[in-house]
Image (cartoon, rainbow, N blue to C red):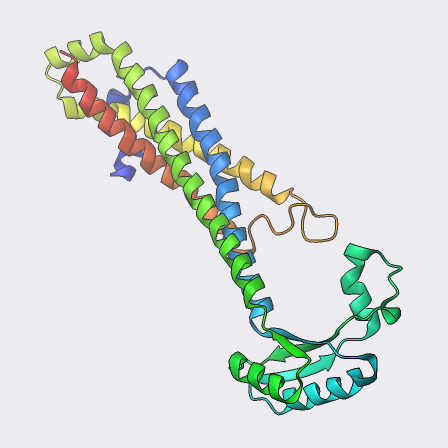
Length: 294
């Protein structure tokens, strides 16, 4: 039906004026909404990638924190490392150096923090295999053999981050639905205005035998093509704007927002979707208005 709406029909096209505010309104609305839809789509896809990245980065890592008097720290650390080496599901485990711990605390306390003089716990970085570990069993073993060691499997950090990224993705899809609904409403208003302005022409067409389906097709064809043209322009402009956003790196404020690899093909479907929305909105409006025009 969408393809037939785009086919050329000179006789039917004369029913709808080729210029006027309805043409400009439809083109502007379709272009603007498609431009915004590109950003909403980019937000949704970037949020999905972010959620996957956070889940992968934290799912197979854990930390053991050792709190012990300075004289026992070395013994406790070695005992914990021995436990971790014999625990199924652990690929590697290593104690973090004072320099690494200073780098972790630097964003909060500055670069001059005297780590060696502070009673900081010793951190052991654990990397899990794909099979993972039995966290509760490991906690019980650590409590029995190294009472000062506490396992942090990052669950309390991972779940809120992934949940937040999932909500951002949902927000992006919700924005796209709202954009589509707004586009349909604006196109329906433009078609309604065009039909009302041509009420006398429609009356004459009926007198000479034109059916309402023929008249409706003329409006549907014209407004669908306008929607497609406007959406194509807006999509290309939106993709260009997304491509110009700051990329990955320390200076990238919007790091990761955009499309990656084959995802650049997805926005090209927006004009087709916009055309379908324009087709449905115009057809519904035309059939409804033609019943009112006598």
